[in-house]
Length: 262
Image (cartoon, rainbow, N blue to C red; front, side, top):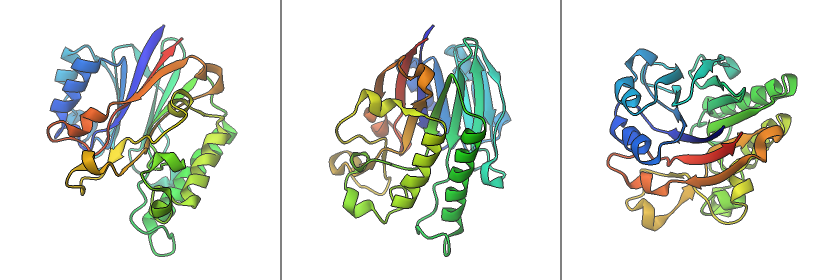
């Protein structure tokens, strides 16, 4: 059963419903995972999504913050969520396809502005969240699984516009990269995007602060698609829809896609 998965930090699903509908109509992924929905589940505007064939939804939400949702053309079963670091945030949800593949949708904490947990509680929460992800994967080794989401870390030197300038900037600091790497290694996750696109600068996020984000091109690859080794060889067609960053009232993130022949 070939299928395509997309992941997108939408930065308010209600505010940006028009561009979610645009993506679904024009790109038609089988499964779309959204982060930072900023909506209780009962307020997510599902009617338009259903009209385009996305009748299956698994979501966790909260008013004004966080929130993750999985929209699917294919039948999916809700298989729960994890509250890493005990934050009480809607940052993870999982769903299972009928072919047995589990999709994990994550929104890792951004971590604030100062990369020092002694003066910035949010940075400590981010590191703790990643540590508990690592421990969970160690204790319950994932199989036949896909992990997607805004992981809020650009791990490689070519995942940021300037490696040296960003070494002390939250999302690319060595300690964050190390923590994310440990979580990835614990689950033996394969970075599908970089398996498909192994070389070159690659970004999925551009700051709202840039007057002309496209020309400045000071991006970071914060959004990821991973797969367990038993299905990673079935992945192909990875891409980032950069054009979506320039749509009307855009998110500061662009959607990331991968297809799987399973």
